[in-house]
Amino acid sequence: MTRNRPRIAVTTSVRSSWRIFPMFALNIWFAGGRAVRWTSARPRDLDDVDGVVIGGGDDISPDIYGGSIVSSARLDHDRDAMERALVLGALARHMPLLGVCRGAQMINVALGGSLWQDAYGVYTASERRWTVLPRKSVVVEPNTRLARIAGNEEMRVNALHHQAVDRLGSGLQIAARDRGGMIQAVERVEAPFMLGVQWHPEHLIYAKRQRALFRALVQAVQAKAVQVANASR
Image 1 (tube, one colour):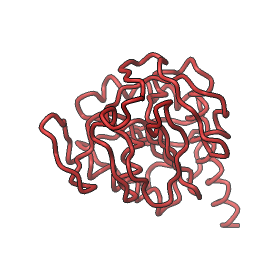
Image 2 (image 1 turned 180 degrees about the vertical axis):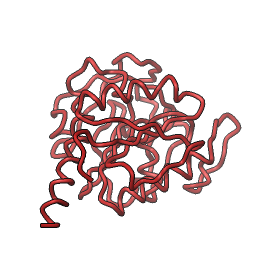
Image 3 (image 1 turned 30 degrees about the vertical axis):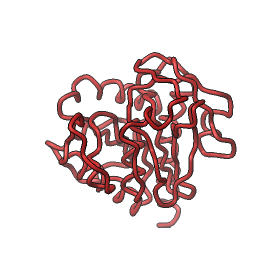
Image 4 (image 1 turned 90 degrees about the vertical axis):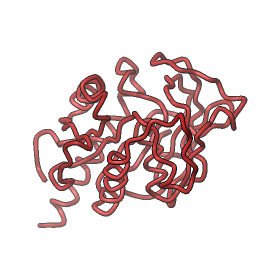
């Protein structure tokens, strides 16, 4: 669909949407798009938007990937179902999608992968951080989409997670790790644009390399619109 500003669906938790969504909306606006808020309480039609951002929040229920539910997990089964359908729906439509923290994990799970529920218990050498400030070091894998977007240099990011990708989903590759080896970003090897980062770039709007993630999403949406228009001529 043709619009001056492509519409980007942004999924958030029902509880924290009022606080999180404005940060995404601002980043997407600066990138040339317009954000549309989606929660499991207000499901919408994927055909009404041009791209998707799956935001952070609650843990993903491990029953989706064959894990065991731990008592400390805070789950939202309705959101899990909605976002899993969005990943698969975006893939079927060749619709660009960006995953943030939980969103990166959902990309992996929806495509058949699994998660470590206690990632720092597995990666004991990884920096254990819990901050919106860029205090964690991430090593970008060379020859990846993420490297083309944000550069090959080591990146300083924030960290608000305790879970991480374990077994990779179908068609995905690792795009970044932390110094302890924990996966920090995944991406589809082939089209469409599908990138998931474990950190929260929406809180790092002052950082050029983080703004580049949202710009890459919007540019992928615009490129797809051009392809569709050319094919219909």
